[in-house]
Length: 569
Image: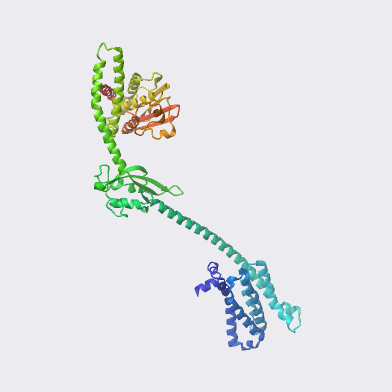
């Protein structure tokens, strides 16, 4: 019953979901029910009505029209065909009004039903309103003309108000229907757009699910509270390997630090860090126990909404066990080979010192020994660099050090060792700079930078060294006018074994460890090192170290200790 009432009260959304036949029947039903009420009332109170032939014919025609609404296959006919029913309704209504006479007044008001139907259909609005007005007018005037009663102005105007009332009702219904249809169209358009968006969203969700489960890395997305929103199959496999189930929380898994034995604190676990809004890359964790233990490289990136506010994070887990094993094997190999090379090299250098100090050597012999000595020094530096790389982070003992004097000393040493006479040095350092650093280690950094400036300046030019105080730091810059580097090469300039294409093409000696070692030394001091370069114009290397007060005790002692260490080397 509720559904029928919903249809009869023009719930257009539900009404238009019905079949065409059902809509026609429901549109005719209010008039038919009203006619039934008139029949019931007439049967009990005005039985003489059934003696009126026009009234009975009107009742019969109304029943025929209702039957036509049920029987006719409206879905197969052209859409406007149903309008014939409300147009034909005016005939039985007119007959019933004429037959009822004064026995039952107001039967003519039944005209409102077909008028409403025509106006609410939304089809041919002007023609529908005109038809409703003329049909109502015909119901009033036709009986006047077909009876024997004389036609007078009084008889013509007696019920003249009815057509205009019907016209007003039709206009009102038409306006309301037009508004409802416009709203319905808007709703349907929005519903269509929403369906498209939902389908696109579902397609994207299927695509995302396929992608995240196809990649060979573990993945988890968490919201701003740390609650998991998305995980993939690979992460579930990692969790099983760590002694859990595919849906086990990270806090319950066996995760370890670098030694593979110390349990990682909850606050240091990658998903916990990501939930707190931290961003990190290549964060290594040791996952699981025993021989099946794996090393995973984890990274985290933030997810932000349209306002730029954090709404979660995505963490990736990449198995790098083989890579870490290979790197460890490489470091062990480098350390072993370097130690094996260092022992005979020490003997060679020792005997070279004895030979070069022998008086009365032939010039050719002295020249040959000089070549051997120079190359043994190069080999010694290479072995030292390899050992430094294998040993990992360098140990430093920072003390107040006369940085200005240290720079002058290393420039002087570079000038003595300079095999390229076209390269000139210029020292623009401020005097009296005292840095809190390990003098021997920083000397190694300066030597590496100056050595590179010489090697990569085959056509000569100036090598400028500047040192100055900057806030609470000492900043040192080494500028050359050499071959320079491209933007792509700059990205890996501080990587181990990195060499530019120009160095390889020109067969410039070196293995690409000096800058990586320099970076490690500077960062161990709490400083930073950077490089800028223009291909074909030269490079600028700059590093910063903590500043010690100029009157700090021990600055001179620190420099003297550095000199003694340099002499020992």
